[in-house]
Image 1 (spheres, rainbow, N blue to C red):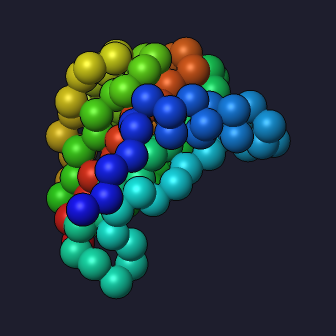
Image 2: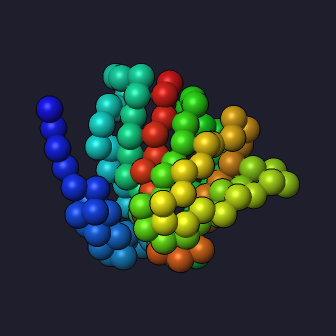
Length: 108
């Protein structure tokens, strides 16, 4: 069994995002391309986004800190610390309304 602190990892990812010209950072913490389940911690600085994209499978995101907007076509959902959002199966994007860290879970 592996154990890690999501809080400590979130702080680290925000620091890495602040040092990046893209304003974002991510780290896969479980799974990967060879597994069906993948969990990735993503940090975005306020005003930055993950541009519109297709999801690789069923997925969700859990906001660990900050606030974001999840957009799919004409629909949008706001998420803040503690919120859990099921990802739409259509093209979508994520925008950081303030510095945000979320745990992205995807099943391929």
